[in-house]
Image 1 (cartoon, rainbow, N blue to C red):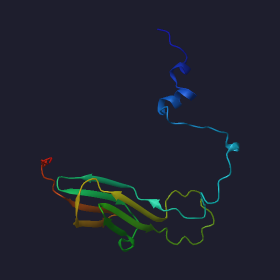
Image 2: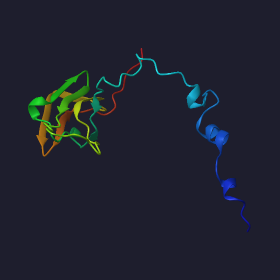
Image 3: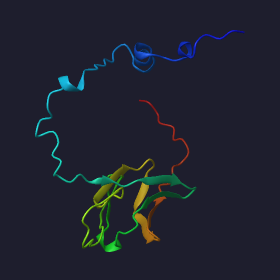
Image 4: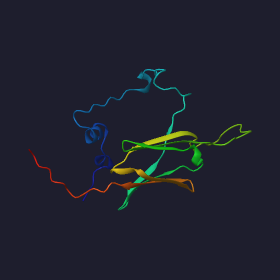
Length: 156
């Protein structure tokens, strides 16, 4: 069976837009030269932006667990709090003192303040929380609130 050109199998331009956007969505593509210069109040390159802590959140039969890599952070410099079923972790990754550095050839590591707030997916007992920092991994374990079986509610 003869096959058409490879172009026949590819989505092009408007086909891609139609595949991913609904009719209510609108997309505008303009030449970069036509874009107005960024306003000073939108982005300040000199202002540090807090990083976001990457986490894993999972549950066991009895616990909800949140884990995040915080290698290089002193446990005394971590701020872990919970309010209204929202966990917040804040800290600072310090690069140390790099005396004599004249030029970086590659700088991929994030250094500076980070934070992360997570609405917990299940109800937890806020007075039964354990936070442990071991080998650069912060593990926060919560006792889950035991959910009874379905409770029948009488409609009046």
